[in-house]
Length: 380
Image (cartoon, rainbow, N blue to C red):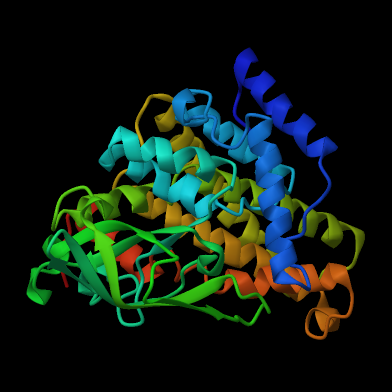
C-alpha cells in the first residue's frame, strides 16, 4: 500500500530513488564482517552526504528539519529499494529521539553529527541475560561514587557493540524492589576501562549481537541522561521509537520480499499447502500495511507512537515470520541444503525472522500491553 504524496514529498521520494540507483549494492552479510561494517559505514556516510540519513533532525544536528512523516517516506523508499540497513540504525532510529528529549544542547552537538554520518557507532545496552523483555528486573548496578558512578553488571544482544564508540545504558540506581522506579540511563564511553565486549555468533552465521560486561566501570556525573532513578521515561521514549520510522522501512522490505515470493509462485507449481501459507503471508502483510498507513498519518499530524505501538510490533513480527516461512518452504530441498547465493539469502531471512517475535519486546509482552493498557483488562 502506497500513500498519496504531496508534490514536495514526491520530490523527496525521487531523491531517495536517485540515490539508490547510483549507489553500489552493499550486502547484509559478508565473509569478512569487519569489511562488511566498513562498507556499511561508508554507505551511511554517502547517504548522509546526500542529505537523506536524518531528514527529520534539526539542521544544527545535521538534518534537514523536515517532519517525522517525511522520515517515514525516506524509510519506505529505502525499504522498497532493498537498501542495506543503516549501520547506525540503533542510534538514529531508536536512541537519538530519546537523547534529543533528555540531554542538553551541548552534549547533543557533540553526539549527534558524528552519529548521523556513522563517524561514531552507538549501541543499546538494555537487555540482560535474566532481564530481556522485563527490563524492570535488570540487575546491572550504578553506584554513586563521589562525582560520578561505578557500574558493574552484564548486558546482552547489543547490536554492533564491538564497533561502538558510545552506548546508552540502563542501570539500577535504586533498590531491586523499586523495579522501574529505580533505573537510570547513562551514556557510556565504550572504550572505558572495565568494559569487555564479546560478540555472539547466531545461527545465521552473523556476529552482530554482543554480550557486554561491566567491571567497575567509572562514569562521570554528566554521563547521566535525564534524572537519577528517572531512566524509565527514557526507556519508554526509546521503545516508542522502535515502532516508528524503523517499522515503516521494515514493512517496505517485507512487502518487496512478499512480492518476490508471489512472483516465484506464479512461475512454478505451488501445491495447496504452500498456497495456503502464501495466503496467510498476504493477510499478515495487508494487516501490517493498514497499521503502518495509520501510524504514518498520525506522524503527519505530529503524533508519535504511544501504547498502541505494541500493535505495530506484533503485526510486524507476524508478517515477517509468515512471509519468510512461506518463501523458505517454497524452496523445497534447496531451502534446507542451500548451495547458491539466492537460496542462502532466503534461508538467512527465514532464520533471522525466527527471533523477531522476541527481540525488541517479546510477543507475549506485547499481548500484555495491549490487554492491560489499551483494553483495560485486569492483570492475570
